[in-house]
Length: 295
Image (cartoon, rainbow, N blue to C red; front, side, top):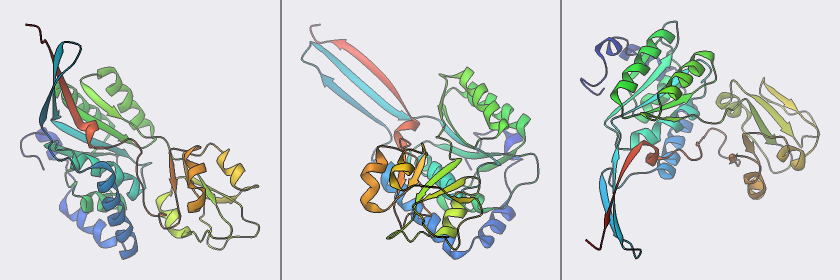
């Protein structure tokens, strides 16, 4: 925990060590391995930052000079609500924060009941984000006011619940003091079944516990299809035209899938995740100085 930075009243609502221990003990080895694989892959995609603080000067042929200063912001916060039940999605948002060089980091779980000792909490600890506050909606709004007054924070929002929508709206009115990031919603998932696609259905169900999984290309019943899974008519063409935010396709169909979706995953990636466009640079502020070379 960043000692002395976050308000004392919030620190008193930090998730206790006992909840982290219960969450880790309940996480089976297979899921733990998927989370670690996600952490390693996102680390490679999003960072690491070689130098979190730097200046770069250029003399331009147009007769002026520029100097760019880049520095991490003071604070970054990952807000999550009850609709965020995917440990890989949560950890894929946390890792870029941890790589950014921002000195004060935390997660805020917005929930009215007791702290949840679930896979998401275990994943945050595995990634190294161990400062987690458990706040109700009113307390989360008070915490947002603290971030606005600080003037140098990045807020990430992961979830589709009403409480988080309200926080995003309040944060939007406060911008530009706050830098905000919200990912695309993952309420529907498209999967291409058939020859050469031996998907790990239990893992897909774990990653997408709150999403509908639409399966194309299956001519017969699929044993082990997730509870939210449903067979859809058509093959690859129908899948690509479905408007899905994420597609699971065989490797040879990845180039076509990239034209139709922000994220495409091949077999062997069922338990992994990444957020396109979320990298360590989001958490940095820039200052620019211009001067006239003729003087």
